[in-house]
Length: 445
Image 1 (cartoon, rainbow, N blue to C red):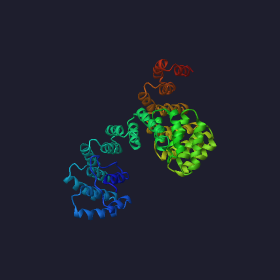
Image 2: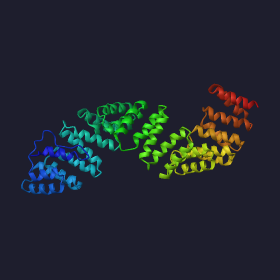
Image 3: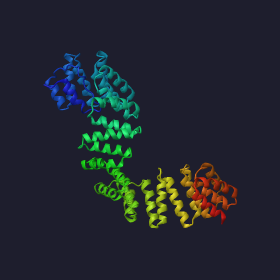
Image 4: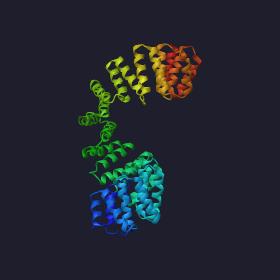
């Protein structure tokens, strides 16, 4: 005959939180109809039988608790909550009922109420690991990682082999920038579970975050062999291999992935990016076109497509790709405008070049590179006099940047502001002797 405790363990194994009766509860034997319905997970029938049996014994705590569970398993969370609260009013120390109530509050989006009840359940059953586990899981899922860590660490101490707990704690460490602790915990878990693809993936991810890319490679390769159902290990493995100078292997991994995932735009993007790094421009062009074909709003792919077209000498196509990258937004818009500006400068179209430079600077005002390139274009276009307003601003904004100051000084010298150029030259003599020598030669001509 199946005991109530065994049934609860079976049932809560399918729930979102790890609830069960405390060890000190003395279970009663359930009737055969109830056992049969619960084992078959026929929650509606179990509810009907339990309600019938409770008519003759309405104070039966075990049956009342099972009724609340059956309601919850049918996603009748309001009804399950009312049933659980009915139990706790009569039995304030009913641990299982409190856990059910907290679960229902979670399902109803009432997180703060759920947390309060989990804390109460913890005082009722201090020797039980479940309330701490639930608190840790809920707090981490709502972004309260600092608070979650205390409960997760406590739970893991009690349940050292629990993989969901370990993975959640690793995620908290990573979100809080504690990458070394995440890597140590994740690698121990992966070594204890060599056949668990998710554990291998977690270890690889944590090692990547802690910049231990060489160690991450073996774990990521194992995750792929075991069949992790996502693109993440392939993506991370290509990065890890590339970081360790193994670009050919990285490209092989990326290609192997897209062979089995032809419709994944990120996969094609990664292949195209690696081909671009190896200057396989024609192949990179094909791969990046596949990426944007699958994902029309893909700024990273359009930006690198512009780089490929530029490398192939197709300036107009490059500009169009850069425009698409800028139009789709994201972090690549400023780089895309800079790419356009450099192509216009190369072709002698300085008016469009300076206009594109202005866009790039407005989008990334803190970038020294953007300012340096704009100053170079002004100098090459012989338009330093027209640009005196932003040249002065560049000097004010970057008073210690050798690159910005060198370009500004060349413009000052060209427009007759020799004293300003001399002042910069004195600075460069100390900070960048090579640039100082180049500036001195220019000023002497």
